[in-house]
Image (cartoon, rainbow, N blue to C red; front, side):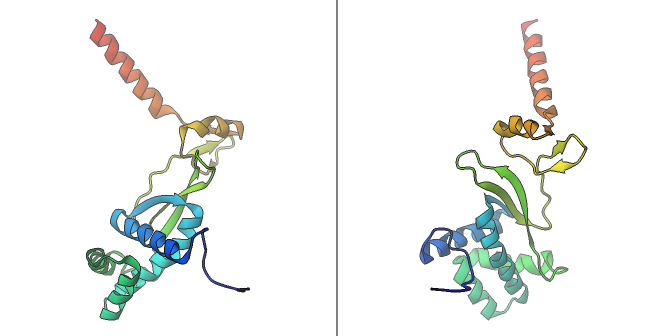
Length: 173
């Protein structure tokens, strides 16, 4: 019985977990944000922070340690070059997790894992008392949001519909 073992298994074997983390870290480094589940984001977040701290050192040993996780030399060089300028004012906490809502297929909580210096454009859900709640991702959940005392703003969708109806009227005339 393994007591106090660090890490999350995510219902995978050691090699599957390692490859999953490699893919998530690689995609985060390339795109600066990824959409994933809460469990995967919480598992990968400390790994990403440690890699960026290693990249800021810029030594040969830190490069080799990063290659063990990322397994791609060009991405590793890009991270090392980018980390010194981009994260020079921070000591830790390079990533953030933003909740996006519940996934339609399996009911898992989806999140956006991104770097802190990235601007996140997530839809805002307003409650009746004027506060803000967790943003909802899929349009199928708008009815459920209103049932929980929340109102989802549909202004942009209505404007698009009006524009298309006006353009159709102009074409008919």
